[in-house]
View 1 (spheres, one colour):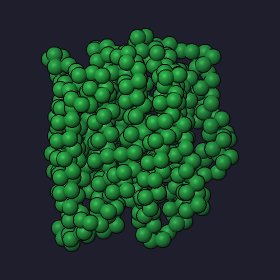
View 2 (tube, helix red, strand yellow):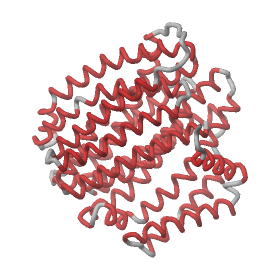
View 3 (tube, one colour):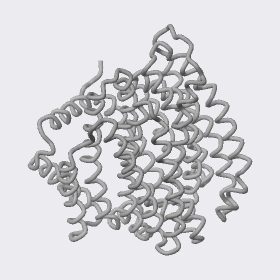
View 4 (cartoon, one colour):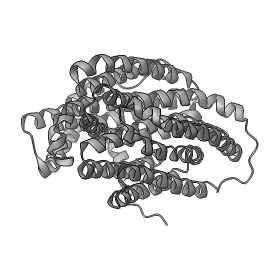
Length: 477
């Protein structure tokens, strides 16, 4: 599981690096207002994309892991369902582009919205192939397909912008990248056991529906604040500032979502064998690993928000500092919630995370409606963060009851107190420009030494780190 997780983390890092390159390039080259339009389009399409693709992908992963002899039938049924659903969503977005643009007070969004509709069915089909590869444990191939999408996307975006196609060209680059990624994923997923029994489409869909609803709710939770900012604050630059804050906080969630991807089949296997002791060990290690790795990142970003924005986006984006400092904490909470949701889903209870996530959407909407008029962009970030905290608490209580343990409260306190160092130092001794990099490196080393001194990290964790480095440096035959 560790090697699989590492493969996915590396692919996610490349995915994130390409995304950051795109966001920083568009933000600097086109300015806050066009960048805000790009952010709004991506927020809208991401909600639909995740709602459509994530549930079926997880369902294909789970059943392929449990019934490897039926992998071909599972994949085939998933493709049929996603082809129909993707086509319907494509038509809805394409023909509703004008009303959506009008609701967001910007008719310039019509063309890029219609272009974006084309990559929704491509993403839907792509997700089935990725789910099939995950269920078979072929995470190296899954990572390769992701890398095709990442590299194509970043190259095409800048090529189209430099050719003068602007935001419509950038959105069109996403369509191209998913088309090529779909082709790569389909080629990589052809190999496997030659015999495959038939699998029930109804069973696949019935398990996927709660995950689809859950995924859609999480997507709304991550993007509602952007849509409310655009709707309630009519200053075009504000959406650009908030897009910058959102972009900088997505990396932790996307990287550590790899834990959730690999936890799903692992928990499915232990649950099907009624091995709750092993499942509890997986959960405790994963939660501890995410908290150890995410806490210092969140605290450092919160403490260095202004300097990070000035360094990456330029001083024009300094109004994004308050929401960035708040939102990074919310995304950290959401990352932990997503991991626990994968654990609950893998144990065969997908309706539990669905119910929790669905309850968070109206809470987030009410908080945004109340806080944005009073506190502006910081209010939007605070609303999302409070909703994420509520979701994490609910999921943690259920997992604690089901698996009889998450992690020691004392260890969690030690991790958070150690990570606090990375918040306090930048707040009192801010580092600007390239000095941020060595400053961050020194602080992360001190944080690691603190964890070792406090016995949070021991021989087992250091051994896992060594194994990870060996996997990274090992040359495959």
